[in-house]
Amino acid sequence: MNKLSLVFAFLFLGVALCEVTEFGFNPDEVEPVYESPPGPRPLGVYFEPDDMDDNPEFQSRVVGGTSATSAAQFPYQASLRTAANAHFCGATIIGTRTVLSAAHCTVGRGVGAVRVVVGTHLRLSGGLSHAVNRIVNHPSYNANTIAFDVSIVQTTATFTFNNNVRQIGIGSAHVGGGVTAIVSGWGQTAHPGSLPNALQWAQLTVLTNANCRSRHTAGNAQLVFDHKICTFTRVGQGICMGDSGGPLVIGSNVIGIPSWVIPCARGFPDVYDRVSSHRNWIISVM
Image (tube, helix red, strand yellow):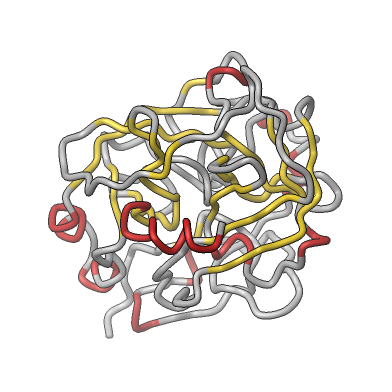
């Protein structure tokens, strides 16, 4: 099999690096700079977020995005943190003690190793940190194919809803191509790169799955399952490492969960799990 020039990678960074040739994963094109969590874990690439705090580039500005100016701008946004308060994935508030995220963010992590921070647009300050008492990963999640990349995280205490903290609807309609959606997160602003302090957001265009597959290599196109949804607007704009699990939103509903990319914003569609495809399961475990 010819070595593919492209590499799919999880947006969350915390897994042992290894080659999966049948899906076109090229370990020579990524840097293993994250410490992996204990226990079973997905394939991918990690970096240690604590290392970013002293990097002068962290104040730079999702790739090609705009800095949020207040927590009230994205009150449904949450951050999954380590016990040491290091951001590792995004999440979306969908209930009084429930956030929606990606399974590759939470597989291998116990409840004591995860905190949920809400009510701030700044990664390094503000907000309220909540302990977690339940993590449910989709039973069909597959770390090799990145299928069913969905998880539910529940906190021990209820959120206090206000202008800075609000839940958002769980999308039920199938979204087709040509629609504008908004993504937000604290992921890298370039790859390789660093994490921003201010939450980044961008308007992206949703693609049909057929269009999305046609823009990827044959191997990576196999990973764009029907329960995925893709976005692409232009080269130099899109999601990146650290944006995993966060919200892709249209109006008052979350429609996508950032799952994997060709890192990052190189001209290939970003791939999310389609919330409408998982809505019944999400509601059943809330």
